[in-house]
Image: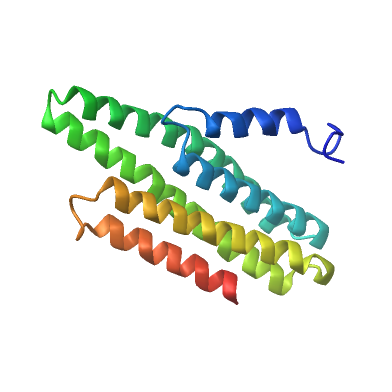
Length: 181
């Protein structure tokens, strides 16, 4: 199955995995979290389609597109923040770059929490034989949300009371709760 490009194009997956494993700072954890969330959203779309739920299918597809775009945005924001850290010419520009490097994973955490909620609803109301796929999607999305929240905290480490850290934690906790239902 894995060498059959008709079902899963391993070459494309291998290129993605190579990019994540490369000796480069980005893509890294934020991009990986976004892509895991996008895969969970794709599973939601599948479950919704087989369940005849066009609205949930459209929501899953939209979340998938959003998370895929956030994966690239995260890599760019992280790279820009690292460049500012190395140059250290302007504290204002550094602060802006670090804020953006925290903002993107915060949006990833939120989108993944939305996927976890959608997947939990599909597990409850979707086609019963697809409940395991919906539950798997919810667990994947919850883990991705937690991962992104961790990155928000890491990128804002100098400001532990920052409301973005608290928001990221709340999003991840909500995703976890949805996945455990």
